Image (cartoon, rainbow, N blue to C red):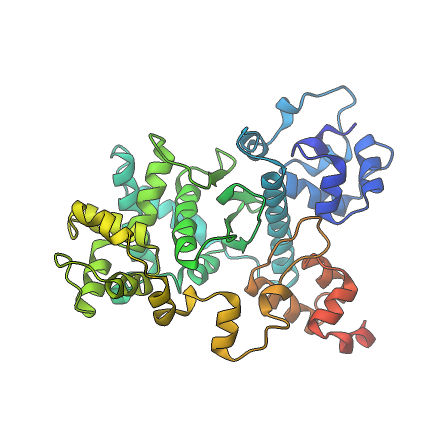
Amino acid sequence: MNPYLNVSGLDAATCAGLLGYSPRLFQEWAAGQQLIPPSIASHIASVLGVDANDLMAPPKQPVSVDEIEPAIWFKLRSENLGPADKELVFLVRQLGTFYEELERVRSQGGASGWQLAFLQVRQQINTQAPPREQGREAAQVLRSRMGWNTGRTGIGEIIRGSLRNLGILIVESPIRASKIEGCAFHVGDSQRPCIFVNNHGTTWFRRNAVILHELAHLIFDLPSEGASLDVYNHSPENEISELRAEAFAQEAAAPKEVLAHVAQKHGISWTAPFKVDDLATLVADTHVEPRLIVRAAIESGLLASTQKDVLLGLQIWDRLKQLSEHALSTKEYLEFVGQEESEPWNLRRNTTIPSRTLRLPVTYVKNVLEACEEGIISISRAARLLMIDEHVFLERFKMDHLLGAE
């Protein structure tokens, strides 16, 4: 048996289904009955985090998985996590390899600004400071470097674009069975940083904080730890990396000057009794959930701790929907913009080949379609990059006009 194909801890049939290959063929590769073609071995190796040469020429003597298991799969051994968690990491890692391939064929070379940005942040903080202070200092450095201080308002609308411009892959997809709320890791030859956020049963305001939390892990903790994995309802307790990441996300999204500016702009007093409209307005303008706002306001001295329970007890959602389209459900948003619900864009981003569905980033899908329209990649390759069947690709994106050009 080829031990390198087993490092993820998923069985051969599941791996084959996630990769979009025949289970029978994958089993033959695992059993050493057939050689893995070099191009396929390179792709699988990137997803698994192993060397392609090891996949094509596995050891003749038995090797323990403990000796060859990459750090990311070791981290996923936790008893709190299950197959769905491993599968989502597997799929996002595969998307990362496709992302790299698309950039190569489009001769874009891949943005690598994240390396310099991360280095500059690490160099400008006091590594001897308490974890939460490190997180706050790092957030302040990054806010300044990225231009997030402009306007002293929420950054939820711009963080995804800003981070993608640095070369960071961000994937937000609903994975119902997974316990992972967010995770981060590096993938591919370039060690591209990837952030995954599970948007099942959560809000855009919460996801903004999760993205920033995982970004802190990328800056401080990876790739040495293989991955950061944050599960729902997990308390950071005394974990240094979690305390630092929590403080980073809070300071990056809702520093004192932003909270003060938004409150002043709307005539909100931090000392007067809060109304539903006050808190809804703060959430709409800062782009983060009430819990983070309240915690940040208390720690920065704007809000008395005695007001915490009152604010968190306010039912703001109906009012928030009037103030921000990000509070709307998909159906409500389509009604708001006047579109039919028959084929929302979200569903057109869903994969079909893998055994578990992943929702692809909008910019990635658009880049694949542009490359196909320009003749840089074939229809079959475009379908593969989007992890859908070719006939689904043609039907979903109306690309029949390209068939005669191939």
